[in-house]
Structure formats: structure tokens, C-alpha cells
Image (cartoon, rainbow, N blue to C red; front, side, top):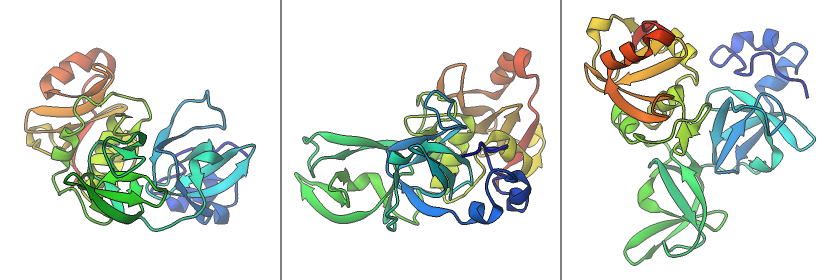
Length: 285
């Protein structure tokens, strides 16, 4: 299994796939691959098949991937959602791909061993996790969905696949406040700045690039500082923040090590010695 020169695999630039993958895998195999879905609650995509390697991004329970290569217990995969590639353990995959019927719509929830909150939690699930529901029941007034694996989730924490959590992605981002910052993280358990943008917009029905440089290069249209309003994005080199209103941002950041809100002016002043002034502003609509 050869390492990929650009592990983002030209996300949103399929025209470059063949050149990027020369010596790694044929362009045809890159485009097709073998369909699979993520069977772990959250699976890290790494730049090489090594648990000690850093995390580039994460894929969520039930998300679809394409397996491009496998060896020594590792799979090299490409996300169907944002075209990111990386290595993950084969045990994190399920090759039996069944259609998702629902998506987790709250930042975090549990899959229980039975349809009762008093039963042990089998595992935790992040917002955006895709579920295949095979039944439902009610216990003491709470409805539960039964998953194909036999676990149960609170029905009120889910939406039917294809529905959104609303069109106000800023309000969705606000639900992540105080979630821990995690470099490469892309879940309700921990996430980085660009993942906050991507996940929030995903739950509002939009598919956007994973990394801040991709978002800065082509998401929406450029605007001037003086035109900033709710929902606009502010970019620094290697960082992105969401405007909650004309003066306040929400961002996952390494200063508080969490998703936090703060005045934009204070953030610019605080980070100036490291990142200088923002590199641009964009309206993602």
C-alpha cells in the first residue's frame, strides 16, 4: 500500500485525480473502489497505516467510503462525502452496505443495549452518524429506534435520512459550544475549526470541503470586512471562524481548546502575533 502524495485526494477536483495518484493506485480504482460503510462510532483517517500517526480527519458511523486498497489489517479508503482519503483499521469497516434510514441530529447520543435508558450503553454516536433502523418501540413514554445490530437509540435524537436540522447552520454550530477542540476531529466528541463549519453545514443540507484552505478558496463568495453578518466566514492562515452576528464569532480553537464564542475584534487582536490579520472573508451562500 503506497502512501498518497496529497491525502485529501484532490477533494472537489476529480480532474486532478489521475496525476495525483500516479504510482499509488490507478485512477479507475480511485474513482470506483469497493463500497463499504463505517462500523466504528468514529474512525480516524491517518496518513499512513500506523496507530501512532496523526489524525487527518475522521469518518462517522454509517458513512460510506470506497476501499481502494487493503493490507496487513489496514484499509486505504476514500470518503464518499468529501473525497478525503486515509488509512483506517479494517475492523472499522462493514462491507455489507445497507441504506441509511436516519441520521443522528444531536451533538452526541448513545446506542443502548436495549430499548430502555436504564440498559447499558453499547457505544456513543456523534451528530451526522447514519443509521439503519429496523424497528421501533416505546418504554415509559420514550420512543426508541432499533438498529440492525440490535441496539436502540432515542428516536427523538434522529431525523429521517434526507431531512435537515434546519437551514440556519449558525444555530447548529452553536450547539457545539464547549465541545473539546481536537486536531483532525470531525465529530460531536471533538472537532477542529473547519470541521465545525463542515458538520454544521452538513446538518443544514450542504456539502462543503473539509479543510479551511479549501473553504477559503471556493466556498461561497468573497466579501469585505465591513459587510460581515451572521453566517459569514472569517479566515486566517490555517483557521476559520463563523460569524454569529456582525461582531461575534463561533470557532473551534486551540486557545480555549473548545468551541467558543468571542468578539471578532478580540480574536484578531489576540492572534495577531501568530497569524497576523485575517486572510479573507466569505459568504457561503
